[in-house]
Length: 214
Image (cartoon, rainbow, N blue to C red; front, side, top):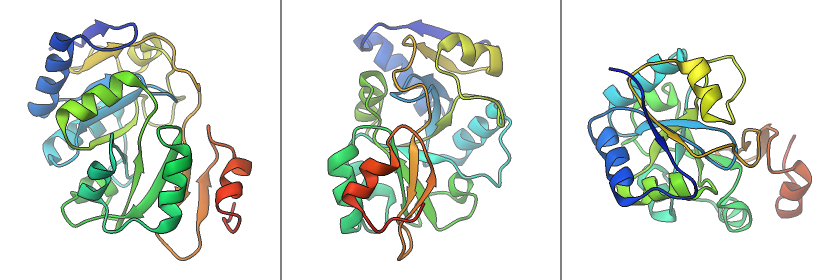
């Protein structure tokens, strides 16, 4: 089965949204624009779906992937507790390019987190993926839509060049806004730490959490 492509300007039409949800419900993968780079996502709670995502990306199973959410309710589905520091950052930077690592609930399959006790969570600032997340009603296991180790794509054309004609739904929403991955912050331990610099600057984060370690 070949890749199926939907071209979208600003938001998905009802029939296109239904098509994306059908893919996810059938444990298939969907590629979509976010505010940072193009992402590839699958039903976070279905191991078969997540394994398929890893195979398409050629990503080693010992590398964890993150979760995309559309609401605090979806965060609470997968995270053990949300510390005050996380709430402050969420209020300031979500939706946006900030991924926050927190302690996960046992319900999250080990394949998503590579057996770790934590999971990265982000609410993206993009209407298309937020439509999908809201309609699907639960978080997606998601990561950048590139072959592992190569550059993250910012257009659907770059996605096709890397992932090729495999079985997935590709939503072409044009070029992404930020053109770089999200900033990643680990709040799962006592000392908050920046693990990856990205679209949200260190300076802005330090205004909220002055004690954070770079």
